[in-house]
Image (cartoon, rainbow, N blue to C red; front, top):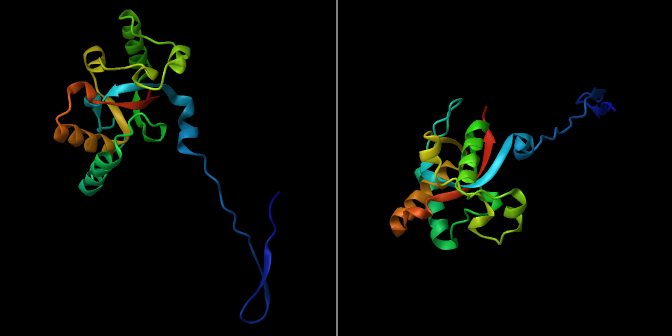
Amino acid sequence: MKRKGVNVLTEAGKRQRTAVKEMREADCVYDRAAPYLLVTVRFPIDSLTSEWSIGVNRPIDQAHKRRLRQVFDEAGVLRRDASHRLQVACSKAQVQQMLDHLKEEGLAQTTATAAESAEGDSKWPSFEGWGSVIREKAELIAGHHRVEAFKEYLRLRELPEDERWWVCSIYNKG
């Protein structure tokens, strides 16, 4: 139902009809993107690129990167937390190729198996071999500052190569 205008008094004391302004609600970006979600996985951060095939990623703000690294130092790294997942784009075919590779290697989990597993690394399939299987980097859509801060965190703490991953939600760019 369309709202009617409201009468207001002008400076001259005359009534004037004005339109009621309404707030427009927008859908959450994650809700709008949900149909394009392919899989959530452990993904190697070195197989991500901040270069997009369409559009431009914002440059790294060094102060923001430094603050994130300080948060990692003080509070820990929340790479498994759903609210801190990286948003990644690649083709559906690439994800299927990786899932087929995991199946061939006997490393694939069904969704039910993953959901039943204990909280930990086995909760998500690992796309650790992405670089050798796909031979193309996936596009990092959201989380660029987190990845750069995390790389610095790993370097400063001299952590091993097998820690260079983050839980990512992968969306179909095709």
